Amino acid sequence: MARLYQNAAANTNMGFKLGSERGNYAIGGEIRTKLRFHKEGGNPNLSVPGTPIIRKKLEPGILGEANMDGSIYISEKLDPNSFEVRQTINHEMRHATDMRVGKLEYGDDYIKYNGDTFARETIKGKDMINIYGEWKEAGDGGFPWEDDANNGNH
Image (cartoon, rainbow, N blue to C red; front, side, top):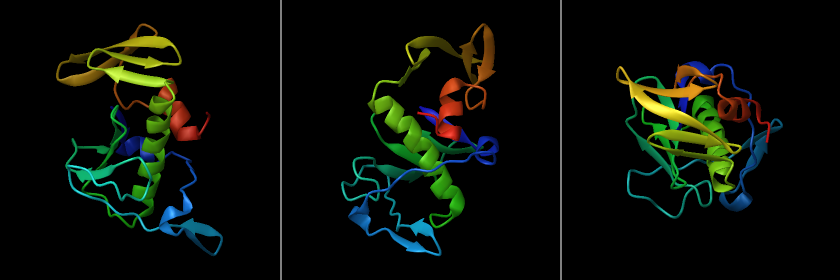
């Protein structure tokens, strides 16, 4: 799963267009929408059409996770009305979009991005990814898929 770690969120500059299905509106030039969340299990009437957003307890330091099934997990510790939760959803939506179009894929032992496959292992209890010969912990801002999600380069 693609994850947004707390330290990565501080340096993100993200944006993405939400559909008008939920009644977006603007105040002072800022687009706003009412986000709704649900518990594990799914609900077809979500704020981002086709993308279930599920609030749940995540590992320490993780704000959000995009899953191969198209769902997004958001930390239950985040205030649903905060800028931080909107930023996290935007970041994870970029990963979810990349997965849907085949640009990003992951499994227990690999991450595939833009046709390149990177080994993935649990090393000393940490989720590690081998990128160009160097093992880095998942969530590191130096991965190309994180650069895309943080900078919006699609």
